View (tube, rainbow, N blue to C red):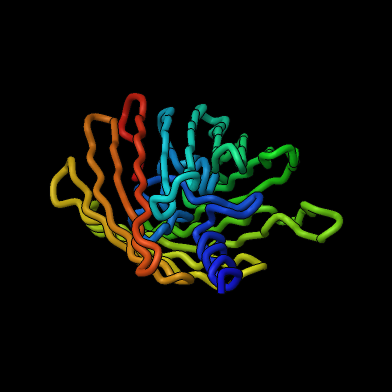
Length: 278
């Protein structure tokens, strides 16, 4: 019974992308509030979710993000992202992630570059260094991989995003044959008069079941966003708020699982100069 529960618990964590070596983490509390749907949202956290999105940022920006899975000690994610657009040269990005605690932790550093091929199409690529460390003298492992993304804007109010993480499955352990996950995502965001954003995303990890996510972002006044969403496998509801203060954005969110409870998140970002694109 204990083994069965432990396996079930870990499968939930794997589905949330918070407890597997080299997982493709979603960063940003805005993204977390709309069903963890991120691949077609454009903001500084695109540096960690779909690097092609940073090509549409007009000014440098920086963001920090924190998430805790089910309010459990040790299941913490910390992220720092930054994007620096250079006129006519593309956008350079940084994505630093930390997950875990002393018994097990994982660190990821990603350096990215994105550019517009035309106003309606952008691409981005990121090189990743991953370090997994086990406590109790079990040592650590180091890996390198990459990810690639595309963002298309066929119409003014429609954004389509696609992203692949670890396209060439990298082996983690020769003895077990374990590999870093290869994850494909495809999603879209529809903007209704800069007041409502509807977003959806499909994800397929080659190891796991298909996941669908969707969410709604409503801006009743300029400084406030109200958000909600849903994610499958496991089935969870998400919700959150966003507050804008002259280039500074504060986002809070949580996911809720009926058996495991709440997973709180918070993000803070700042766009230097002109406000960045939504």
